[in-house]
Image (cartoon, rainbow, N blue to C red; front, top):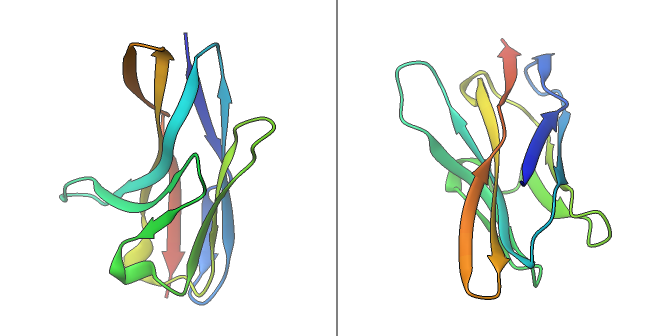
Length: 120
């Protein structure tokens, strides 16, 4: 059973920084990609950033130049460094990992979410 646990959320003033962490545990064949999503009240969950097992990254336009996603190849943790935070970044942030459970089947797993609140 794969489990994801996020940490690092909190309250920060505008222009401040936070780093989110996502710890991955359990057994699996290999990672396909990992990412961060967020959901603000009354909105749909949206992609923030992704990183493939090969290290390729992708960001939504609103966070480009401010957020950096990275992963640890040893323990498979994934991080989101968030700089120059804006009030509109306020949301619950979710970690997502897409993995091959076996060589023949893949699955997508989500963490429980961590709240990020940016005050103006």
